[in-house]
Length: 411
Image (cartoon, rainbow, N blue to C red; front, side, top):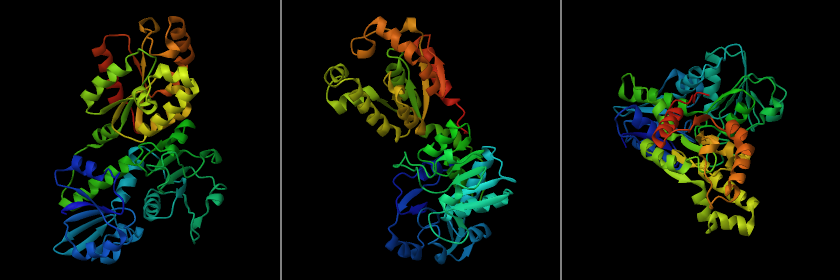
């Protein structure tokens, strides 16, 4: 392996994708079981590697020299092989600092609560000190000097919370390390988790009107710094926007017959994303058409099936998802879809909507109008972008594409 990432489990790592966008070297993912780490490091058969969980501290004894940042943090995530000697660095410092500064989060003179006590927590502590934090508390489930318990953290009045734990990371997307309702002074939340793009912690903060950001930009910036160390040159490419939009799903909501399926299929081709229709997935799961599901089991049964399909699709990235008209009736569906997706409301005027027999709840004009007035406000509240879909297919397609690509994803 010339360049790459080592770790214990890398099945869902974005590092290969990120490095491929930054520069043109081959970059591989190399999973190493704990008993095999010694042999790998002793062999030194690489030019440059990044290091992730759980080896950021374990690799240190194999290094010949360590940078000042890595030494002060006590963790290494980048190693370069120079003529058989190994040099260790910590580019997570630059990544987290970049994430905070990119999103205009003010750390100076603030009280910061860092969640977790591992290598990334040490990085966060160093970054916050460098940015002039007033006080820094580290919450840990482990006993130890310098830590506060999560119960003790409730008594503090932090203004900034930084999550460095894996809580909320795929596949445990619904988890969150803390309940923000217990904190009244929070101004911003930073979560180093990047898969999903927006963790439940980030979304909970958004619901309270708190600035909150996920960790993808941190991954991007630490990768840029690592590439500069590997190649010994400055990297000027700005590929973050492209990486984010590649990973982000586009979720279409709106009334039956507003064009979600038609427009979704066209969007998937233009954006290079896989198209999925939640109604089609429900039919596959139930092995019967939707009208029959309603007739035999009722709407509640259908909504339960829909929620299961949505929960599964929401953990995936880079999709175009056309949803059923009633998907927004359950708040948990919307929150799940927001973790990796931008929700686009296709707002087609009522007089342009049509009825069809395969939509049980809007099979007549009277039912269609009733559903429209019942749901319209919820569509508006659920979406990230609302598109006026009163024109022809090509115009509506252009509006959706522009709305998705121009959406502000910084926080």
